[in-house]
Image 1 (tube, one colour):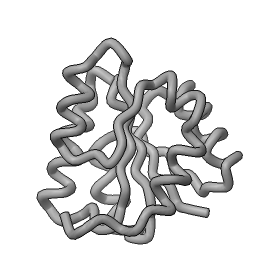
Image 2 (tube, helix red, strand yellow):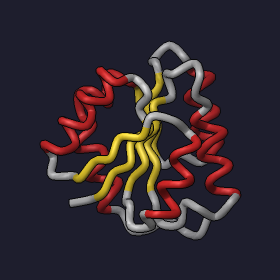
Image 3 (tube, rainbow, N blue to C red):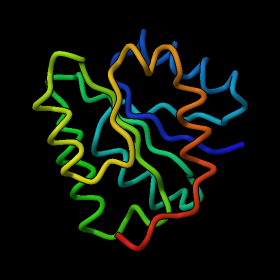
Length: 128
């Protein structure tokens, strides 16, 4: 179905998400650090969805997506972030940064494949 780039520093949960997305028919590439995302986007412009773990204290996913957008690197790429359900500040920052969808980690664990499929099937966003 779609190529998914997944910035998931937590290896255990990352493996779980990768398996779920592959089970939904997606090709998944796990990325462990933010600096690798821009490099990877330059090398693979056909990715459909970028999934970002917003629960990692050492990763500022909102700043990353904002900087990619400001640099014109998102193009038609859809973005999905997941956060700890009690961390509403992170959710708000991600929404303000321009994520297409921001969901609690528990929802990502239950519905990740369907969420990515829905995002991948949407028409490309306006230039951002």
